[in-house]
Length: 142
Image (cartoon, rainbow, N blue to C red; front, top):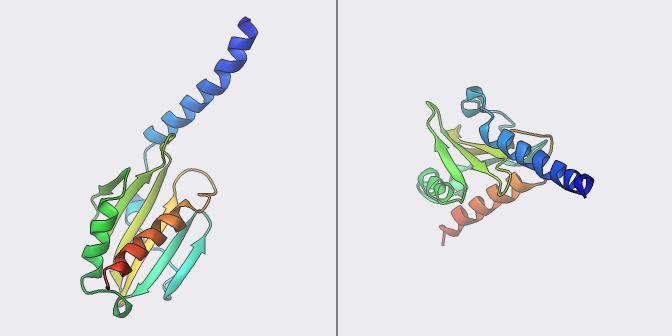
């Protein structure tokens, strides 16, 4: 009976340790200040994330402020103060894995770069989230 309890407790302890690590590990401040490429217009799938480069001419007036309103209403998302652009951390349900999103204006384009912090694959979560934001922003065209 003790062996069964130990075998059952090990995965629970490992899961708890992983959740603590995900929630308590500091995020390098440079991740909140970078403006990575690509810089050409389009949707770019990247390892562990996505980058949208949207021409302002294709977006509603005040696109940046409208997008920021949408992002700020996203569950488990908090804004991080930066000197350039806007940065956000969105945490997954359960374990609380952090994903960073950077939003900035440059060369008449709205840039949205979302990427994971821990691991190698975000399983398309960032692509889906930013896609929903883009749809909400473009919905304001109507």
